[in-house]
Amino acid sequence: MARSARNRISRLQAIENLLLAHPRGLTQAEIARKLNVDRSTISRDVANLPEYISEDDHRRLILDRQGLLVHVQLSLNEATALHLATRLLVTRMDRQNPHASTALRKLGCAIERIAPRISEHMQRSADEMQSDSRRLDPRYIGILEKLVLAWAEERKLHIWYRREDRQVNEYTFCPYFIEPYAIGQSIYAIGYCDERHSMRTFKVAYIERAELTQQTYTIPPDFNAQDLFAAAWGIWYTDTPPVRVELLFSAAVAERVQETTWHRSQQIERLNDGRLRWVAHIAEPKEMLNWIRGWGAAVEVIAPLTLREEVKEEAKKLNFLYT
Image (tube, rainbow, N blue to C red; front, top):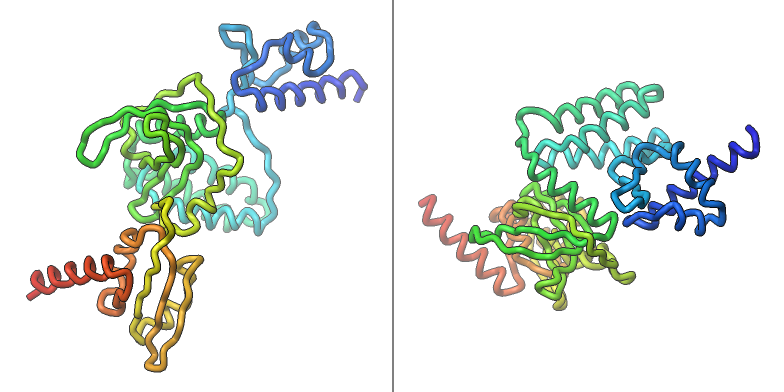
């Protein structure tokens, strides 16, 4: 390959990298200065740029992140790890998701030569993700797309959010993180709300409408989603110290409880009578209620007292219902 051709390819990659770093775009003159080349050189390069790079009304080159394809090389075990992750997505989300379906098909095609049987299962998962048995909700997917783009480009999002009482409020939202939640088959967006002057969590399904703004924001360098959810049972976190939760499991289920690490802070102790004491520090113990209910009479809530009383009252109602 001639040196001029190699230089052009290198320059085109450099232009793409610059536009990735400048979501609001750059003029040809700005690109030329940053690459230390003549503007006429950039003008000639524009004709060779991929279709996901275009010029806006202000003659600034803009990279469409949604059109940019990322090339990834995966080993068999790496691809299978992604397959397992996507199977969780397929089994825990009730809406059709064309992006997840397309990703699964691409993943299946990528490993077809080395593992045709696994590839076949990935293609079936893709079909399942788009099956008629799932809810078709274009509005939901459209809002999720805008959330993802706002997060990627650090652009503020104006949202219309429906509360549980059906009232709709408007917020200016800066997405810091998007988190799936298996319970309730939901996705949540966590970030800073300008009107509330604090961090907020919004359930994507409750966002009635979303519009991207031209306002930018910066995710604080010390923000760490893993730290934020460290004490959470699922999606709820607080600024207050986590609450000590103590549960007492019967001997009949003790082995099953021991098989799984339910929370990173958990401590377990097998008692002489075969029962199991389970202790963890949880941000919001109420979020554990569904899990505790699932164990029925095989678990007793010891602490905190508020959680114990809530389960106790529910047990009374159940007793009345089935008497």
